[in-house]
Image (cartoon, rainbow over all chains, first blue to last red; front, side, top):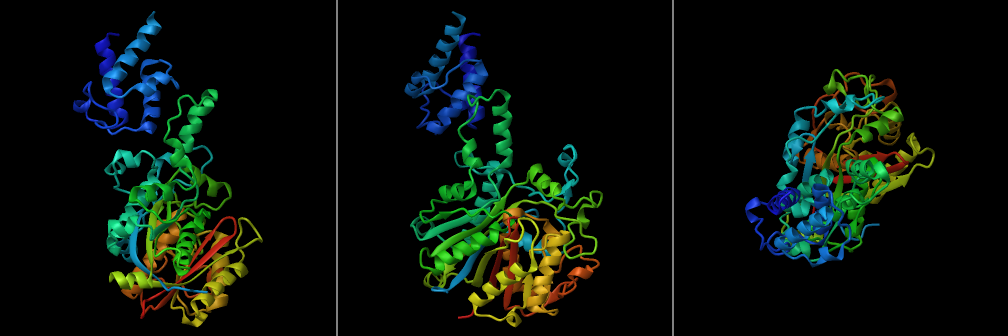
Length: 85
Length: 410
């Protein structure tokens, strides 16, 4: 899976779960201010991504530092690469 | 004991007939049935009833996701009903959120469908790792009350009585008492429930559900009828906006009716089979609180669900207290039994009957049963100058409620 494919699948999964427009899924989008998501949504986002990519995130403290979509893209790409390596 | 007079200034309904109190009353007036064949029920092994009254034409996605994410359908129904009641009562945002308004709203249980989702996932490997954060908010016992209070910014008390089928009237009673005691000026009161096959199963297991009319859905339930064979489950939400008379006057609100008595009692003789004497006692207490005699009541809106034992016990209690001339009817022949919503939806219909001067007869009452014949059971719409109505609402668990409603006079 290429990085672009990971980004595309991340965006699609989150847009579907939280009923967001794909046009709004730009890398600089803030989860809180632009996409309107909160801490409860973050819990569900972890589950959606775990199921989408078959990865384990759980209560990883790194997830708490994610503020915008590009942060999440990098996080998921790193996770996938870690599995491959 | 009544310290402050309590009136009704708003009504809201989501019923098996659709959204709105106008639709509800028109369907009742026209003698419609909301009972339909539900294919899903036939897929459940051992389940006898294949019928239900389901809420049509509501797209829950009309409620924004941020609000809806913690709501199962029953909370959506309750929210829509509450919004209708608030609009009719002309309660603006400042009043709604200022602390003078509270809510008393219950359901029989939290969302069974959501519980099913949870256990379906959990029992695979006894893991919670895939459980989403919103499930609890749909399962908790006060899900409807909390969700509606959150959405509407209610700052007064949030009460969530759960007394199975008597929840609707018990919630109205609690709201009435909160206002009478001066604790709140306005209370949004009522009940809500959503359909789930296991609700039907509950009544089928105890042999209280209708199973003989699966091929003729609109012929059941049949309260007080010779051929009645049990209840038909339905769903919805009914909300009554109760207000102190002083508050309503100060706001210039239109007063729809007055609640002048409420009683809730326990029948400890059985958890499942009602006894006429405690039912009668409950109605007597409500009358006493209203300062009325039995002869003052113009119409009894029965709980009668169409069960063999329940209808007989209630008709005997009504007959003993009110005699053979006071008209009695049940609205469950039209819309089935909406569980926690039933008492509130039927009370709303009573307010409408009070205004229309019409008594809606019991649908499917073709041959009044001998054992129910101690009371007057109209079989056609009766025009009557209605001033005072008593509404019954009972539940498994031995919970009885009665509310006295009267036309408002200064």
